[in-house]
Image (cartoon, rainbow, N blue to C red; front, side):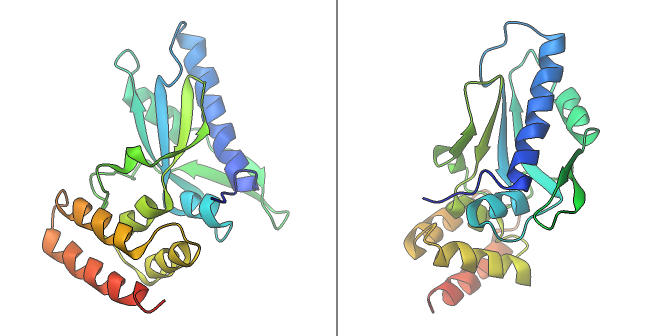
Length: 195
């Protein structure tokens, strides 16, 4: 499975979470590896999977052990953009999107069984959601761009149609408005069936 973890955007993501780890270690000692876990979703995840379009904001689910205050971690991430040079040799910045929330997206609750480790053996560990779970997470909104992203992941063999249908139905069981999601799932399956 091909992922693109050396692109300017990916390196900026790693820098952001490395800065978070350094800040945490200034205030806490003897923390175990994985005390904080970041699960990358959204446009940044799409970029790492495909090396196609990127995003200037990072959508991530953050988990932290009880002795760390998650609110403080989120505040640090919100207030510490990373400046970097993009593929077009232009200076840009990566911002943490504090508005991202997995409870509002269409997400299969088993997504963490398919995560791809990017940074491990650190206090702050970084994981990429699978192409399958990224595609399913785009079903709730299902804008034209989301449809194109799901198609791109599919043609790159990130998941099969059967896997997509099963995982989407799992997500529907936990989604606030399952009828709308069911309609989006059917629509997307009909599109993917043409490939």
